[in-house]
Image (tube, rainbow, N blue to C red):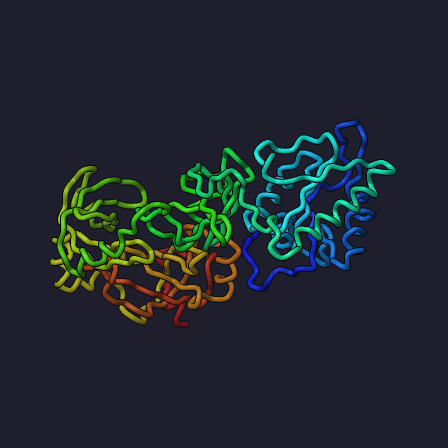
Length: 438
């Protein structure tokens, strides 16, 4: 799994020069075999030290246990100047150059004489060329020092590293490079050096904002949007040029209001509808199944809640909501304090809970919730490790039964684990309550 890559809160170290470059031995265009580790140690690093600055590269960070990708990102993020060597074809180095440009780093680019430089940066960045002979190496060292001194000057043009194409905002299809809970990093499929972050605040106004972006945007998936460049850098947005509809939707739909909706999609995730005055929602699956809804069906729904931050409208079938005024039958639900066996149905490790089906209550419309704070230590460790799976058995005590705020007409049941944890074999017919009480 990719590490979480994120910006550091502290300012960059102005005296740190980070090198994004090939490692080991590579054959140059003229047939010369270059050892880039020696080149870094004896020439690049020494040139920087002579200036009173600190050289660094991803594999030289003392005591690091980070992945190469994480170490490179952190090095670029921390550095006052980034030096990129494009002498050998390398996807990693090209990506690191894109990161440096995205973060508007002071940048020095160099390459071996005759090396192929990506065409999409030609004319945008002035590169230093060098040779690895008796005269070429000293010249390269002097050129690197001069270039670093130049970009470190206040107001240097190299501090503004937007592509010099006249295009600040570019519509594109982007590929997800990595994803974390609160952001994703993407690159243009047509120009791998054009990269940017997309956060929750850039998710399309027509989509629900996910709690965990990594669950929706998987590495390698493609999304459409716009690379937007401003004084803060380059970001990727699905909202660029759009009018935010959520203030209007929040004013349009009052809590309890009944409106018309049309079923736009039916899948394993539920029944999705488009509301008459704009906006989308989801009808709880059990309600949709009971009503026999089909694709294209028009139904009356009651608005339960409008959340403009998560871009979400919660609704329920209007007739179902009215009927829910009568309390549900308690015969289908357990009582608080009751102890019994249960079967794991769904594990939601990222949110810290497990959904379980209680023995003896097949009429419950939704499973009971076992939160991580109510689990035995062994079960909690198993959930975190991913070893708790569908179908395993657990012994629980009911701690709460209350009307559901999300699904009117139903009850939410919360339980805590008692006695042995998940993994113990239990027969649904065995007298679990007596065993648990012993």
